[in-house]
Image 1 (cartoon, helix red, strand yellow):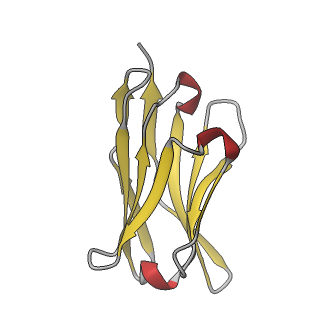
Image 2 (cartoon, rainbow, N blue to C red):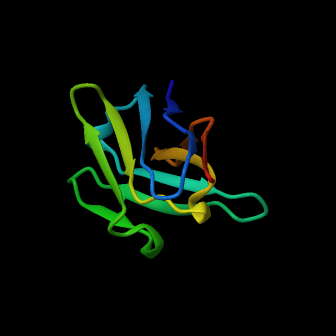
Length: 115
């Protein structure tokens, strides 16, 4: 059974940093394409960052240079390091993986950027 559990969200001031974590069970992260999505109130869920099984990374333009996606193959976890946070980064952040035609999601972790 695949389970994804996010953690690390919280309230941070503009310009601050947070590191989100995604713990996976039932899959081996290094063998999968893993993604971070976010959904702000009243907006559609958007893809923020992805890391492929080969280790390549991709980012939405709005976070390039500020966010970094990485994984720990030993701990079987994925991370999203978020620096220089802006109020527009406020959203619920989800990790995601598609396995054999099924899309798995975590429960999400709230990130609020506000002074």
